[in-house]
Image (cartoon, rainbow, N blue to C red; front, side, top):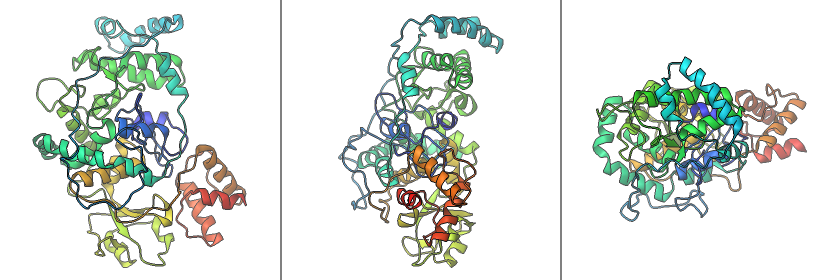
Length: 473
């Protein structure tokens, strides 16, 4: 779980959540930016292995999973046979890869860290066993310092998140683990398809859990120092996990940035939310059996406020001439209906609770009404794109068809430098964004809406490339 990791690993707004090791995945890694998708997010969905989730609005990108073709949503059959694609089967945890190099500074750091770890209750025995194979991993430093920035449209992102193969594999895995998912839903009240979708987004249903030696990776990042305090905290948590006996050092593999298991928990999140659902005395999220990982994910969402029986969101249809100034308000669906907003079937959306309108591609794209459970998913990874990906993939796994609306052609999210330029230009014109940091938050969106109204543009608050061009001119 990268929700915390994500924040610290914030990359530029872009377009590509993931964070897997060698293979790109689709997991978003960033929080409310806009609909940007970070390069790491990119690797999360397909590769399934996550390195961290950023607290921005970034999202994911994928590579494997047969996604070489365009992922823009297109007309597809309403139903999809799952038999054509054999289900992806979790494989036994990969032997951790320790491609270390001698580093005297790292060795001295380990000596000093040992004293800090013991002072926090880690036993000498646990420390010795954990560090018996630990080594400095220069490739981890390279990965941390050289995270490419990409730009990907929300259409492409969701196309990868709910690709044909991911949906087919998800349906097959949901069927194969039906009893487990039903029991988990009964215990925690979290919809089984949402748990299955997170599994699909994070590790491609267990097929890409990461093979980096976790103690080495976390120690390397803590020693390197750029985010030393955070990674030292994760390293202490990893040692506490080993001390409880939930797993062993040689089985504790994960992503280069410390995410572990089928649903990619970082160590501190594991300590807070992981559960022993099998009753074997261990909270084992690393093994071939995904039971504890799936239950731990449900426990995480339940403790974050999941409301049973409430959808994450609903695709909606806006009336002609819709006043986008209304889109920023949270209302009951019955109140949205009074403004002409309906489900794509033309009927009013059920009153499941207060909902806000989400326009991930602005006025020209698909619109959604999202409920509290959408924000609960964002507690797992604080990205609008990620939450949309999980929600949509979950719906598809449960049997729903593709989205009904269409996305604007050629759209992409802004890069971090472009987002900064947008903020600077808005501020120079008298529309304060509250700072120039490249993060599209509520103040920047409000400034965009104010500018759009002044310029006679639909005030959707969307930071598009076209809007940046207009500001430049």
